[in-house]
Length: 230
Image (cartoon, rainbow, N blue to C red):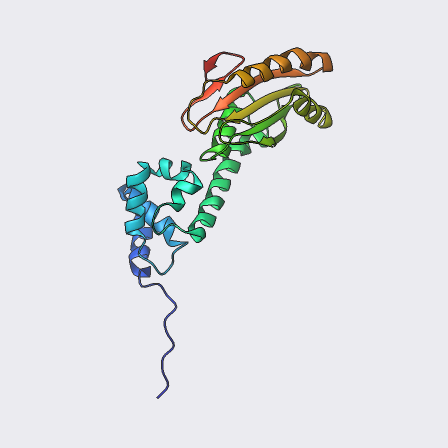
């Protein structure tokens, strides 16, 4: 008698198929933990992901909290390993590119508010400070959106020369600087203020408009030049 080959399908495939049908027919009837359970199932095909989904929501409070969590926080959750971290990074990258797409395609102008939203999506959950620059043309259409520097948990060293040389290399007309505060406080530090003041002074001498310097956290965006939350 020939032995039957072992099934390669997941023992939870039937349950997940039912969840997917519910999601397709009535999305709002599917609980948050069930949506997260489905997502995790793409990384843990042969495991029951419901307990992990519930644990993540309990730890981070919401789906947004899970998506914005730092990698080290996620990896401290039992059952969340390198495989799921790779899946999480892909999803985070998709969300960051989605948030930037309208500005990149010039469907909307690269205003400080729009750049702040791009920075929030890009830097959510980042455990260290990063400084990014949005370079625009005379009509505030986006020319480039790139990282200038990666720093530590408490600072990111950027010199005015770094910003201005990058703008000139791209033949930009205007500059919007953005960086994150992983600690959650959007208030600018003294080095943030000094960098902003120097760029406001130097940029016009080089034929450039310095439009803003925004500080982003998971919950807020602060405009240094406007001295207010966006």
